Length: 232
Image (cartoon, rainbow, N blue to C red; front, side, top):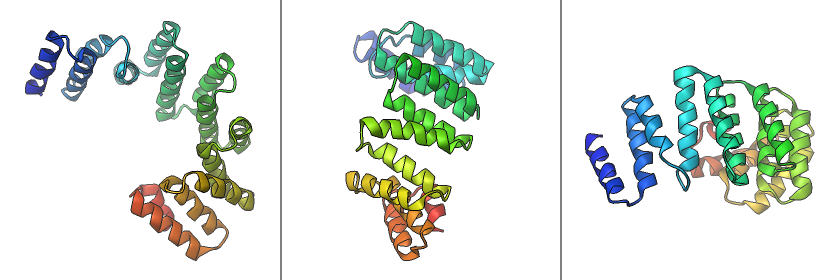
C-alpha cells in the first residue's frame, strides 16, 4: 500500500489522471482503516468517471462511523448541489441501495417515490422501487412499477425478467410468468440470469427436465449461489 500511494501521489503531482489518483488513494486509506483520510481523498474528486463511486464510498464510510442518517444527509446535499439529472438519479439509487443494505426497505421505497416525483416515469427508479417492493412482499406494487416500464419500453428485458421471475417464484400466474421470461430470453439469449428464470418457471410448471437443462446452462455461464440453489 505504501508503494501504491507513492505512485498515485506522483501521478497527481504530474497533473495526470488526478481523479483516478485521488480515488485510489481513498481506496488505499479505506483498506488501511484510515476512514477520515479516505473521505478527504474522495472529496477531491469533483466530476468524471470516479465521482459517483467516490460519493457512494463516502456515504458507506459515514454509515460505519456515524450511522445511516449521516450518510443520507450527505447524499441529499450531493443531490442538492448537482446540476446533472443523471447524477441526481444515480445518487437516489446509491442511497436506496444503502437503505436496502440496512434492511430499511420502506424507507428505500419512500426515497425512490421522492425521486419519481422529481423524475416521473424514470425506468431506473421504477425498477429499483419494484425490487424494493418485493422485499416487503408487496408483489402488487412490484407488478405496477414493472408494467409501467414495459408500457413505455415493451422490450425491456430486465423488467420482463424481473416480473416473470417474481411471479414464478411466488407461484402466481405461472403461465403468464412464462410469457414474460420467454420474451426476455429472446432479447437476451445468453444471459444466465434470464436462463435461471426460465429454469425456475419450468420447475414451477413441473417440467423438471427442461428446468435442469436451463439451470445447468445458466450455472455453466455464472457460478452464482442462487442459480446453484435452484439447480439443487
